[in-house]
Amino acid sequence: MSHAYTAATILRRRVNAKHERELWELMTVRQKETYLQGQSDSSELQMKKLLDGHPKTVGRYRFQASVREFFADFLFPEEKLIVELDGSVHGTAKARLNDARRTKQLNLAGYKVIRFWNGQLRDPAIILWRVLTELGEEPGFTCVPRSKRTWLRHHSP
View 1 (cartoon, rainbow, N blue to C red):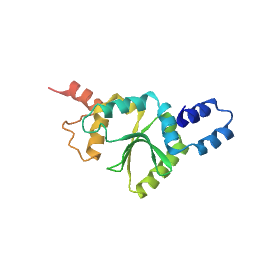
View 2: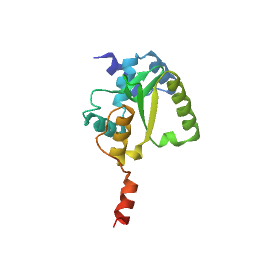
View 3: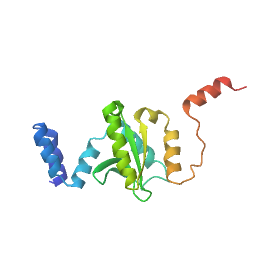
View 4: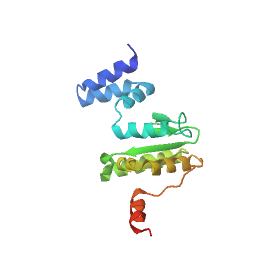
């Protein structure tokens, strides 16, 4: 039995918050990454599938990767680019403040952080275009947001 599996199994039992925090502190970085990868939500997995499906992004990023004292949803280490996918929990004032502090610390360490809301995955071309552009890659396609496409469809001659 691997240590990562054991640590994740123990954390899932959630004896109580104090013990959970103590166990988290005892885990290695790799164990934490493995645990977080197993806890991924459907939006993160959809984003992973999007990045794995494009030849200019596949194999260039790490999923749920450790960056300093944080964990990034998607880290492009060579380019020092972090892509975060935020759900509704990031919409509170406290969460926005925490995200801003975290982004500032990562920026000071030389990382660029771009954020997307989970709902933006409904228009994956926009996300892919932005990620490729930030990576310095030519996307090879132009992007018109879904709302603009709807407007163009209704207002074109």
